[in-house]
Figure 1 (tube, one colour):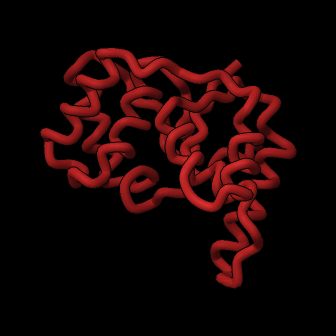
Figure 2 (figure 1 turned 90 degrees about the vertical axis):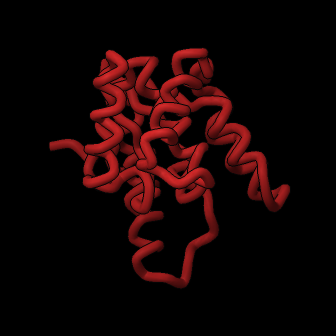
Figure 3 (figure 1 turned 135 degrees about the vertical axis):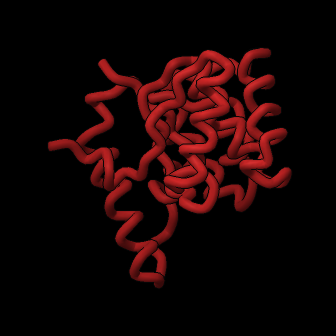
Length: 156
């Protein structure tokens, strides 16, 4: 069975109140469709980074987000993941304020996860950036997961 790391934006879109922005609504619907129809085909996991991020904000929304990830495997933030995060940031691929984004990639990478599912198209699901991050991962002996949106992982 293939594995998927559910990044924070995926969880947020899954349980958020319907948006007024039509593009966001489409993303929310795609997220809910993936969760309903595809999640059972993967080993789903998160990390402490996701838990920390979904734990911030409005208490009612926090409860909904935590409930969605409650039964999922939590990947350990290893020394290798911390080193890879630092290498990604040191390469200047992501800005310092995006350290958690680098952390998501690093944790998923060192645990050999197949896919990283996200709606963060600025720093993660971005072809130019992910290509550069993959080079850093490969130099350190790792294979980066395929970073994609739920729309890209809908299946055949």
